[in-house]
Image (cartoon, rainbow, N blue to C red):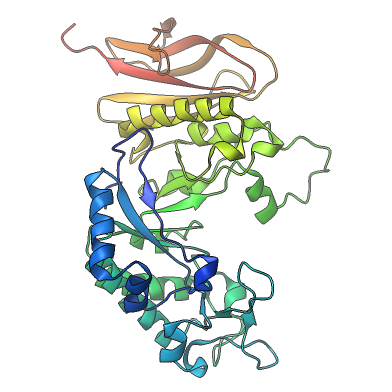
Length: 385
């Protein structure tokens, strides 16, 4: 499926409809009950149609590992059919967002549960003409299967993930995107369109702590490379920027890796950071043909050990993101690339033509790189000269 491109000043927008406290976190509610909370099916359809007329895409939020204890769904199925049990045989009921609510129950990931989730979300997708479905806390993890009724322990989370995804893809319209919170395996990615990425943010350090680094060792001066971004370029990643409290440098990883931005608001960072994020997003949009490349390359050779680069070739032009990971300003030749006849090299952000020299078929490109900055070099070829 082709990437959902921007119609505004970011990659694109998704309107997510979440359950709120007043609705007791009625996760994965039946379609009819969902429509009732949106003022009825017709009103819900009008809502989605209004977003579409404004040039926005619409996605609904689902979380495949739980459901509301007081939902219509909970009345439709007995807990023995779809609820998970702990190691003592007790149903796994836990708090929602409000302490003491005890309003949510863990689903057992059985075929009955997957069939319900697939059929119900397909009805919502088709009734409302949704552009996408977002699956939170997904793909599934091994810990989610240790309490499954009648399932081996441990079970294979990749197999169960694909079990659900194949059901969804068999039912959904071809145009409906499926995106998730976490990156999927290479096999599962063929059924998906994108995911939230935590690479380059503090969340990545929480989920995958670097136990071999002393706490005093700087962790944020080197590039964060998510290899899935380059090995599975069809699988689009959107960074959820949660790293600002530990430094602005982590936010630059989005541009360096050619990833879109998911979420965030003025309340999460200073106003000057919003401007810089806006500049980044405009570059990602302007050169979307490069960042949507089927053949991106990570960490291509540079001329300095403290300078890093990624390559994003498009049909008629090529873009390199360049990171100065040092704490000093760098001037002079920073990278040598395969030269093409009549090629020109520009700073993609400013349009300024960069100086270069050609030796042995390579263009040695010179530019100024500010400390801990990310820049973009654009190669285009003049036709007819």
